[in-house]
Length: 239
Length: 298
Ligand SMILES: Nc1ncnc2c1ncn2[C@@H]1O[C@H](COP(=O)(O)OP(=O)(O)OP(=O)(O)O)[C@@H](O)[C@H]1O
Ligand SMILES: [Mg+2]
Ligand SMILES: [Zn+2]
Image (cartoon, rainbow over all chains, first blue to last red; front, top):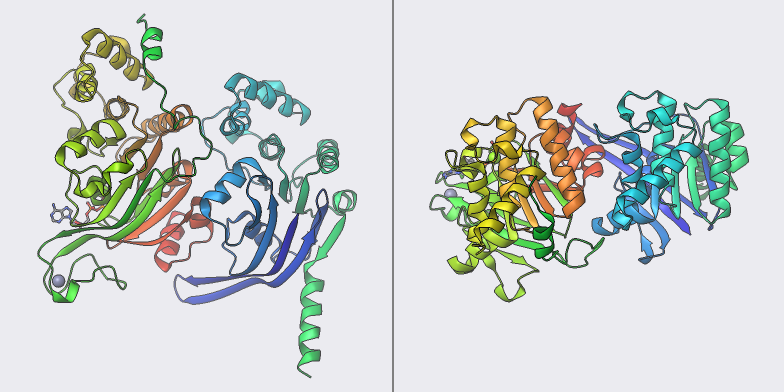
């Protein structure tokens, strides 16, 4: 479903002086349909950067990200046209971080419901679906018509999840989506994600929480280990 | 209460509204160039190279737009950012024929027979201005007749599109002004008596009068108080959601661009230095100038 080949990212910064940052280099992995690939590694090693390249918030410097799209067929997300990326983000690919960045002055229920409007849902049905989603994620009904900007960290995180999950994405990119949830809510989210996997959603993500990772991941990609093995192979080859 | 339902049914819903993805570019611009001055041998190929300003050091000609290439799909919002004097306003004015482009091509998929509209007859240009594009200027004095009634300002646009039935025009004007939250009781007051935010909203209703598939917005929130800005931005978002109008949003405020635009292009010294998905431009800017721009926002 998702095949990453030789993916590298280099930032060329030219602010005060020229600077090159290379968060990860020549990474390859494959995620079968309905599987969850967890990426692990110490803080700052480049896990989130990989996820952002897949979503194309970062422009990959080299490599390919092959994805089997339902609407567009096989497509290389690293090279795809911006228009195609926007379409996939609307219909097939969702991305959740721990930080909420939504439009101000829009009530929670609409923040979630508006994801369904481009898919042709009428407004009232979209709102109904959004309320069901908020309920499932245990957002108190009193908050449904309030502005998420004032919500607690955990509530905002669940709004993020609701926005990502409501479109039933085929590919879900998760960056610490449970970081600020209490144990009980975390349970609900993990259960939810397991259900989605069973229904065929492919996932790639980062969880600091080892327990969550163990219960969700079918495969684990260890970035530190990958770097070490590459370095060893390089030295072995070059004698 | 004014009866608007009958009127709403009279108007055909344009076919471009309901599509999630129209595969055709609605607007395509190639090599758009605007020069103020005669040009000389050292600036005859203005599209090449990085310049230090839009001004040719030898002849003093200002190359406000240097060979711009871009496109717009139905229903999408294209953001345009860049420092003062980078050519953003000149670009939209050329698209709306307020300024005559020096060279370049502009085509609209909804009028394929016309070819390059920058070369079209003034009659065709008028048709495009009245039916296919709406323009909202930073300065409401450019977009409105300040001492006409507000409803008259909207009606003028409808008359320009050959709607002459007075009752119907009045109903449509009321509907449009109501859409932008101008109280009906005030629809016959002149914009001169309105606040800056209200004037921008009257401009928007006027620009939308004939259901154009494209809206051009040049710094519409610049200079407004924050809370007034917020209302105008909310209005633009809801128009996009409900009407599916494609927009070119010019702003030097990256916050506005972040909130509205799907894709963004960055202009400097009359040229496009970078373009991409808005979140990519903001989080992974490639060009040193964009990096500086984004960095100064944080
Ligand atoms: N009528 C004109 N005659 C001569 N030069 C002009 C004319 N109109 C614009 N210019 C010049 O063209 C360049 C681009 O101006 P423009 O108004 O398009 O910039 P802008 O990007 O919209 O700037 P701002 O952010 O300040 O609105 C500037 O150097 C400006 O001085
Ligand atoms: Mg300007
Ligand atoms: Zn010159």
